[in-house]
Image 1 (cartoon, helix red, strand yellow):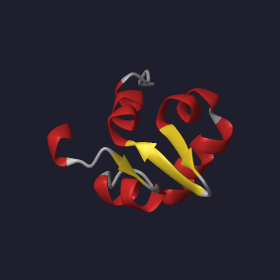
Image 2: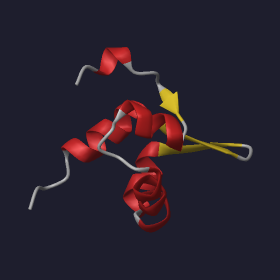
Image 3: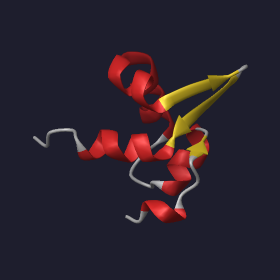
Image 4: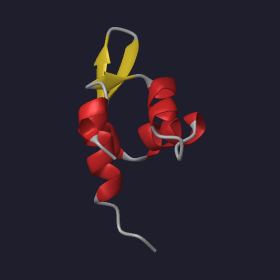
Length: 66
């Protein structure tokens, strides 16, 4: 995946369009249950929640595979 083609910030639905392996429910589950994901990837602007796309990619790259 080339990070240069991605926008810097995206909402949950846009993240799911950029990364087809993610589903909206799974991203929301990570946001509410995983404090590390929320602190490293989420930015809140008023009522809008935006995800920092490079941080999301790094988060999944650094997860151990089972």
